[in-house]
Length: 89
Image (tube, rainbow, N blue to C red; front, side):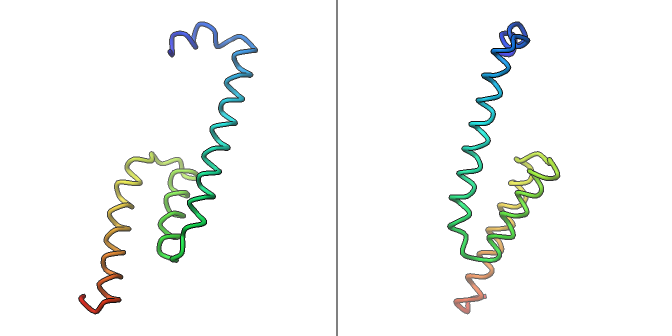
């Protein structure tokens, strides 16, 4: 696919189509982000989501290592808080 794009990518029509596809992809990601953000009911969850957004979206860190670090951290915080609420911790 990369070889095909390298061959025909210089044509203005191809660039316009690719620009439109990129805009659609960005719009879909933003819509999904807004839908997911509506379900955040806890400050801790909002901070974790904000941390992922800043790390990946603003600082341009790679997503997989960021999620691999913050997902277990988020789960650990939730386990700690649920034990604290029930009095088992």
